[in-house]
Length: 234
Ligand code: CTP
Ligand code: MG
Image 1 (tube, rainbow, N blue to C red):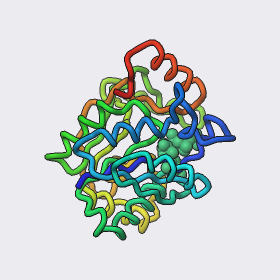
Image 2: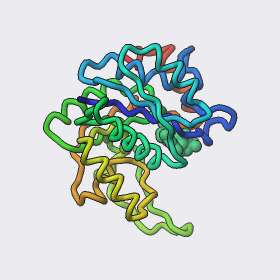
Image 3: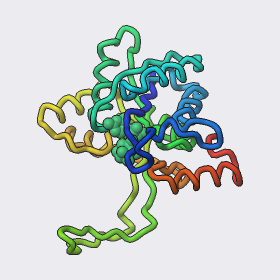
Image 4: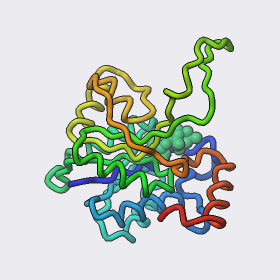
């Protein structure tokens, strides 16, 4: 069974302090609903888990009721890593109900992820950990204490996106070990997996359009694309 784990427990501090960005509309549809629509339509996805802040649990439950796939809503934590671990543990507790073999972990802040979902799902047929990446457009400097300490070759630098796909037992084990070892600063699951399992995830092509809505300029850009281009959620 393949489960989509949709992360919606963040506060969106860089976006707007009044409302978490996943509930903000893009051309009349909440950002979170874009991801839910994608996974609802994907044949290979069996169930949907949404992680949310308790204050928005009711809102999310109501949104989830519109979907035919079983939607479980669970409580997130104070960091992204904690939110994912909480959800994976809940899924394990409900194993008779979920019986997950693979999980695709996705930031709801990336509404235009359809193509990438399909690529990750395909690769997951033969791999245990799959991460979508795109080559960085900018040159990147490593700066510490206002001093440039390294300028890595741009050809080797890639931005990491979601969804990231994993064997369920492997990523649950990785999160449990990270928590045990008090390694709590991972910002994505691929790097947590790599650090704990001492193995590198497989990669697939991400998509330039699968950008993360982080601040208000990203919303303007997303609405512009939606109004002027193809339907990016397709
Ligand atoms: N997320 C989560 N639980 C947290 C923090 C983040 O589920 N405690 C989710 C967010 O909802 C988002 C994704 O992880 O879909 C990526 O995080 P980010 O873009 O950083 O979103 P926020 O943490 O909400 O935004 P900010 O960092 O600006 O506060
Ligand atoms: Mg954040």
